[in-house]
Length: 189
Length: 192
Image 1 (spheres, helix red, strand yellow):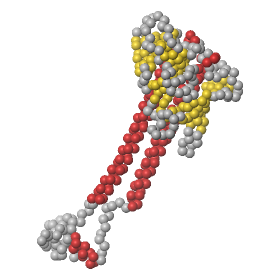
Image 2 (spheres, helix red, strand yellow):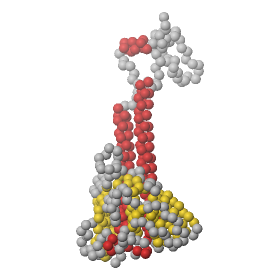
Image 3 (tube, helix red, strand yellow):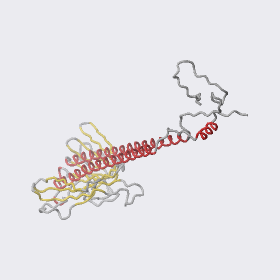
Image 4 (cartoon, one colour):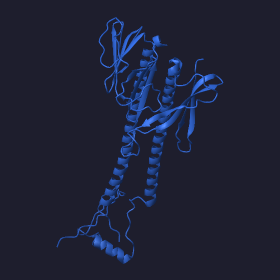
């Protein structure tokens, strides 16, 4: 006959207790991790949106200053030919290229469908910058405008009265930011 | 009838270990020490089996749940407050930018292209320009036309105030908690 096992009364946890405790710890840790990840993602999205908006604000400032201080400017639908030191070739009333000539040199803005390319040439130096996240202006939404807008509207427009207008949208991770730049060149003021 | 559990030896005596007597499966007094036998003896004595005290009580579990819930509510409230502050900052910056645009246009554009007529009376412009400052990205499936919503309406008008002709931009920031929605006004004086 097999001897009976002695009764060992130990003070440990039982298997259901351990499973329940592990489940509880897992739930709490999962919730905390979810909170943390969500907070980090939200913060990252807000930071990216703020940075992108700040970049385009800087672009709008540069564009505004370039237009206001331009002694010569033209809007082109296609890439302009180099004019050397001579006057700019005749352009169009609207397009995705804007060339401004001022005392500091020549400033070129180009929208290629997804981003702005900015190039400044002066005193032998060439400065280039790219501003991503741009799209064509989609709606008016109370922004000042001098032309009818739709999805095929070029970025740059020149009104009959000499106002250069640039309109575009910036789509960030949290919202859409319409940008609207006006400028009256020196020769028009 | 005291027997010494072999798994728990107290070293109160610094001498030799207490000697276990008896056959295997029996305590030193000779009584069987199987679980069934122990339970049988306890039933005879009429005493209830000892309960394990290693589990959490209901009060402890409820208290921990309450603390966890408070933490979740606090974190969520902090997020909402941070979002609200961010929204206010963004709206303020955009309002200033839009006001600057209109100021430039009203100041430097030819008379026919200005958004407001120069002979503004003391009353606000009859047709203020309106729009929105914030176009939040809509969550998929959320009701609304298009991919972006419209929040924080604003209006711009030209008034003839005490400091001369000025552009006035007014927008309404949404309510938050007990704070009611309120109007924010920004003005810029136009050069005469």
